[in-house]
Image (cartoon, rainbow, N blue to C red; front, side, top):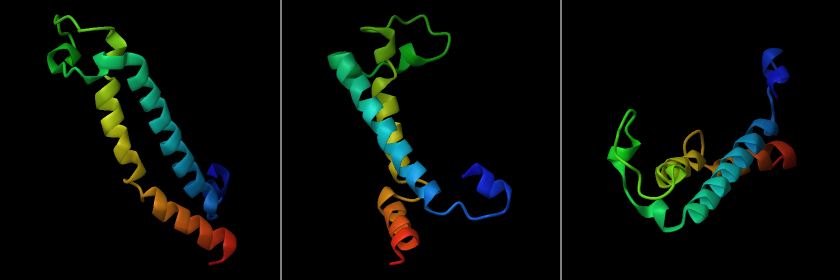
Length: 97
């Protein structure tokens, strides 16, 4: 895909497939992080997340960002073209619909 862009060519459906696959995998990883953090993922601790903060985290440190990251990354399937629009682009390019 990058070589096609560098040579001035259209990357075709590969860019849409990469976007869909990347956002869906990222969301699955975030869901696993929420599951691994358990109840600690649901505790809102903005003071503990601030850089240089001395506020102790409730639960393990990795659970501090699990929920904010999950919520932020849900938007990835929307910005840059929703995954449904990307699937439509793939159908048009590959199947000629």
